[in-house]
Length: 144
Image (cartoon, rainbow, N blue to C red; front, side, top):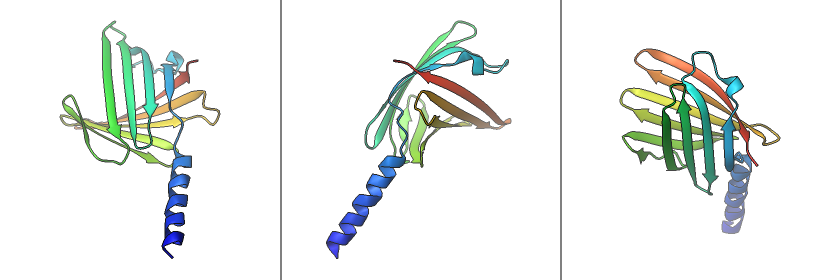
């Protein structure tokens, strides 16, 4: 009986791991997907996944030429992690990585969804704050 339960748990873990998206690598923003009111000029993401954590290095250049860098390292079990002066949580929802950041009174939810061929990465970013919700959609291309 215990062996059957152990095999069932092992099978569930393997199935859950199979649903996880493959996000490892360097991703460059496709600037043609930026809206006219976007504040970004360029962005590069470097993503490294482990079994139960994710590390994302984000280099951005604004339209004003200002360069910004963020490094996020968090478990993927939904537990809160600290990032500078923000709180971050990450988890997998099937084949999508969900990352939620809260800073002051603004919460940002980013959904990372790779294409079936693994060559593009789609980000759906919801900024939720006192002035309402703003939705952005960005597309990144995997770099060799």
